[in-house]
Length: 191
Image (cartoon, rainbow, N blue to C red; front, top):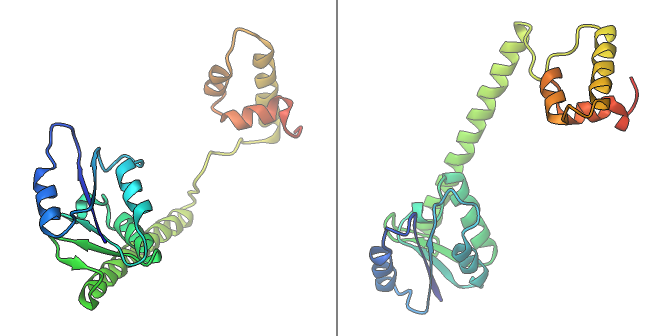
């Protein structure tokens, strides 16, 4: 069965162009429609369409950007579709995973996405190594001495005992996270 999916970002936009193309492609039994931005993680009609897919079905979209906002997201969605034994088809880009050529194109997209991830990881690793070589490390700066740390802990406890200070205020004043504050006032190990 061909299952259609159409999406527009706002209520002011119309689905007519997509629905006409999906109907022409043979999606006559089931077509799911979302009027929601692709930046939203929860797209209810897409979720219904994906749940509806069974082995041998094909999810059809008018254009790739109607399904996902990034190549990585698209690849993840199509891999999920393929794991169900179903296929995917994009009308505008002419990608059809029911054909050997369509599978090849999609695998090529997947290889490009993996290549991009590897390049980003490599750049990040090189940047961190270069920063470490110059003596810079990430994360929150350490307190200079144990005595300075003990003094800051005592101040946190004293401020906590004063009902005029909220936890948020204390954390902001001492430049510490909420979890560090709780550890210091006795909900964690003593220092």
